[in-house]
Length: 598
Image (tube, rainbow, N blue to C red; front, side, top):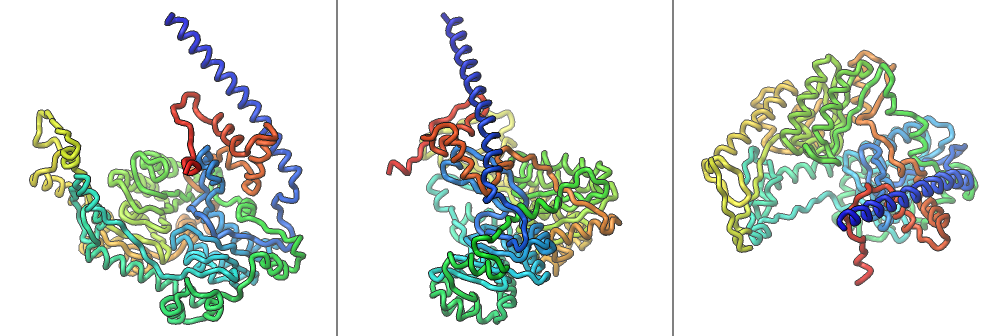
């Protein structure tokens, strides 16, 4: 009986696999045919460069450091989230190409709520200003302008807004939930050991309100960034900074009529969305129905930048983005990054390294491992520079400090030289739940920390000394890497964050500039002159979804659905495609959209 059961189970499993494989093969040929058919039959929708083209940049959604993988799954498809995030690399390189390309006459900024750090937006804005130096025009339109949208768009030659639109300029603010009261109710206590008066990352878990030092450093940071933004916007619009202050604080520009923004010279003209096509057509001297927009991706593809993996005169740009950890898949995994650094150090084709850092920090161990690998790279006598993005703080600064040259954007958030340990203790929660935790240990005095027993004063002292040693290592590393007296580093450390402008004045940063500046410096240091190529690391392998034309992704799913059955829903077809990409054995529930049941 048991044998028969297993044979039945095995045959069912094999049958399912055969059916699944057959469906997968069928879908493969359906997809290949559809891709070919879409590519051939939709010639009118296929992007191409032609005379009097306009580069269209959508200032909406997320802007990442570099091209993210398009990892599709059923949930994202059901939500309609099929758009791929943009990358700063692609946008900047597309603008550089558009500046020189004889087929591109102008740039159109289509604003709709961009999500990016201010250093990222600043780098994009600089690229647009550089494009304008060619004499070509930049026009901008938005139904609604956020502060980030407008900061980038403010350098445009003409700024248009919907007649019913709004301009959200409100300064910079941040709200942080302080959750001590919540954890008190749960019976959870956080035992904190830290170094640095301004090391405030632990505050929301152990305090009811923001400390004075934490508020002071944020006041300074936000103030410096906002003053820079206002100065740049005012300069581009040929108005005074005080005029912007009045529009925000007296006219409440976000809630005022669009005419107020026009009168205040923040907007040039209000128009309907449908009118923009004719306006842009007049700009480049074309019939509105024959307008040709090109994407940043198309222009980026013209350059081939960042793919010189086999070239001998190579400057490697290595990305370190996200939180630093030993386990993360999305951030900076030290066990993945360290071998990459070692490989670059030992690659004779690589003549120099630019580490592009966009990280708020993380694990001390991970930061230390990455820093040690970078020292190994330097031991090969190859130049090493750091280019900082939105953040390069705490662990992000730890891995940056030993660079020969550090470049930061004026709006980069950096520093935060400090260390903390935060250990939860949940004996109160166990008591509330009626659970009595019992432990047997051969050495109870040193068996800490544990989740259900608070540390003694002696144990807290041990932990404090451990954190102090880590802080001393951090300070000494910065002092050596920055060639600063240790006493000066301690004075500017204490966990305090700085904007890029202030960081330069106190010696944490060498130069205000972007990634290209860091690359040029490294190439010069490597004595390559202008004869060098750039390769981006870690190398990325495109997924199936990355190879689909992004502009026709919705049409693609619809075509797949109709090919399977005229009555098949596009999302169901997309789900079927997702199923065949899964591992054979799964344990998951039926995905439900509970909102439909309300």
